[in-house]
Image 1 (cartoon, helix red, strand yellow):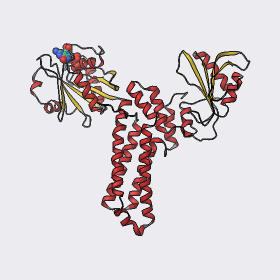
Image 2 (cartoon, protein in one colour):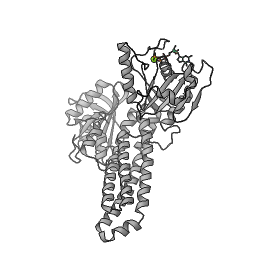
Image 3 (tube, protein in one colour):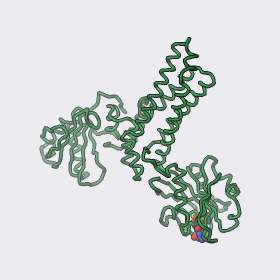
Image 4 (cartoon, rainbow, N blue to C red):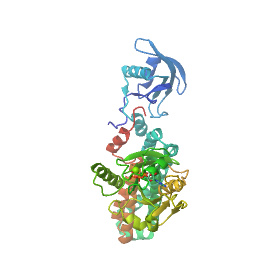
Length: 457
Ligand SMILES: Nc1nc2c(ncn2[C@@H]2O[C@H](COP(=O)(O)OP(=O)(O)OP(=O)(O)O)[C@@H](O)[C@H]2O)c(=O)[nH]1
Ligand SMILES: [Mg+2]
């Protein structure tokens, strides 16, 4: 992917979605955008005004009638001259108009190339470019809202403010290195420690928000596991509010994995129902159990379901969970589901502790609300703050890296007060933080980000 600014050619793409629609938009960007639009409409359009035009082909045959809009650079989305042809939204017609633009010298845009140009011309930063893609592909209203907040700069503003603080501190310490004779006092007597601590805690706060933003965007993988007949599939059906899984009183009913995608108050949940865990001689069931174990390894959260109508009711959570010791991955949070509370007429309850427990009835639905609320809380978005923004795995990793370097710098400062070593840590921290908005990204990273876009953005 060519990421140089300045040598750009004119690109074109269908900017509206695939399929038939009332209106379809062809967007041109680059030095020849206006020339091409003029050739196809015989109109000298005024900036930012809609002109009713006939769109013609090379033989002057009318292809369609529609609107022509022109946005001269730099006051356009890409920062270049941008022309838009608003046609009727038929896929065949739009492809014909697109071909005509290419005939006049434009090149079909690659995925994300419009946003890429906007980034290269400093119209948007990387976070905003990614937010455009996220906004378009949002699967929930909450995800769309948070993507739109990222797009308007909520996240970038915070990153840039911290970046500025970090650079100031770095400059201060680098200066200390340049005047070695004054170094000891310089660091000891200044408020470097305090500034570094404040910065580290701000980065950690932003990291927390970014993790929430990532969860809102990507959702959580929730694996339902436990003994056969415990009511796992019944629980999936309750959460999904439909009979997705087969439920019978025969232990070993579920053999293969069953996936459902739902959302709770804007939190996307990817639920996996699994085969009951037991020693089985049946080859198919064995394979199902193997798959169940493997899904548990990659879960964000596990619901361990037990049939609480028998002796399980007498055992504490730790004992019940210990029965599955070999199966449960260590780092994944578990919630113990004591199911079938209807049989002994026990009310649905939520108990918090080392292991959180929910007593519920997957058959009747009692306690499902408790479970939903609990899942929102564990995802950290129980009371979604209006300041939430969407974030990607990449942003969370960069903030984690940055926090790590700052922690290392703090350690250096407290233990040795060595300016050179702190300066080095701050430089790494700056690189990590800067990679979020693109201040310090390699071409490779940019290519990866824009390559995941669809054409026309
Ligand atoms: N009374 C009562 N019965 C339940 C409840 N949940 C599930 N059952 C019954 O328990 C039996 C097993 O339910 P499933 O949901 O198939 O259990 P499972 O854990 O998916 O079982 P496997 O797929 O065999 O591992 C069925 O007869 C359900 O109707 C509940 O809350 N109360
Ligand atoms: Mg089942």
